[in-house]
Amino acid sequence: MTAYHIFTPEQAMRFADEHSELFGEHSKLSAAEFGDGNLNLVFRVVNDKGTSLIVKQALPYARCVGESWPLSTDRARIEAEVLQLHARFCPEHTVEVLHFDRELSAILMEDLKQYEILRTALIKGKQFAHLAPQLAHYLANTLFYTSDFVLTGPAKKAAVAQFINPDLCLITEDLFFTDPYCNHERNNIHSLIQDSARALWQDEELKAEVAALKADFLSKPQALLHGDVHSGSIFINEENCKVIDAEFGFYGPIGFDVGSLLGNLLLNYVACPGLFNDTLQGASQQQFLLSQIRTLWQQFAQTFSHLQQTATQDPALQNEHYQVRFLQQVFADAIGYAGCELIRRTVGLAHVADLEKITPAPQRAACEKQAIALGRALIIKRQHLATIDALVQQISQTVAPLPHD
Ligand code: ADP
Ligand code: MG
Image 1 (cartoon, protein in one colour):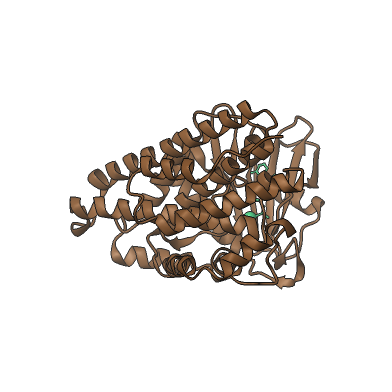
Image 2 (spheres, helix red, strand yellow; image 1 turned 90 degrees about the horizontal axis):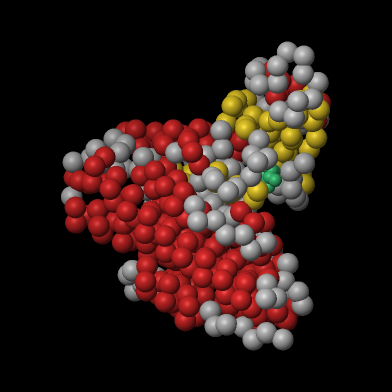
């Protein structure tokens, strides 16, 4: 075992070569650090035939900030183990981990160079019919098979312990649920939406609901979450999509993963009028996103419910009424967490390119205000939006078409 040291491209190259047969004996290898990642080092290692692999290494601090923000390198173990476990239940849509070295906090994985990042594709106005069905399948399978429906009590407790992830959970706890609702120095608020941000800090009704969502995030270990299913963690091409970057994984509320994805589709939805000068293209993209949101929930619920009925091991949890009630609560939770994602990406520390790319600034501010208004409506009304139709109607009602110049 080699003691931890931060990889140079040369060392990442040797690590990849040592742990994969893929390159062949006489390959000429090259490597470069290329990730635009926030927290980690990401290298691409390529041989002279164009075969390539990815090496991702956790630093003892957050890459984007530096040593002043220490972060446990155990996140690499969590990422590798979540991906390996999720791949058991959904190999089609989980990036393949080829090797993990605990001492070096380094993961060797397949290179998804035939794919592009979903956020980038959506910003370009690309539409994929397989997006929602595939991600519904991924979420339903990974979440069901790691839940109490399947695991025995002792196995579940061992799994919860295996994925205790205090450093990364704290980031979510702060950035999702605390900072946006007070005047926190970490917030990043454009000058044109200062008033909307201030209104959030005084909104006691909203803050009570966000407190309830945070309390659930802290204390509802339903399933092994990916923990960061935003559209930058999803790679897509014309046939398939694959999920990467599971370092935020832990046992938490199922609605959090579903809601993070819904929230990211909705961030693009509110950005459409600002991203596309052509009003028709913007409207078509919004229609596409709404239909994907509808399909995502319908197919997630269908698959999860089927698994509940056919694969539940715990005799008490086989009760049909309980199963229906469980899924209904997942829906309400997902709507709430989607709302939190909309708000925190607008006034919190980490923004998204969907909104950041919009110019001029007043146009961007108008879209950001819609994100806040939609986020608020979803958080407050989540227990009353009982069906996917009700959710879609709420989205269309809250997000008014923007005037174009
Ligand atoms: P971080 O956790 O530090 O944010 P990510 O896992 O999100 O790092 O990776 C950062 C970037 O590296 C991604 O946006 C992508 O461009 C690239 N990347 C990561 N994993 C892969 C992969 N398996 N295949 C291709 N590119 C990848
Ligand atoms: Mg990450």
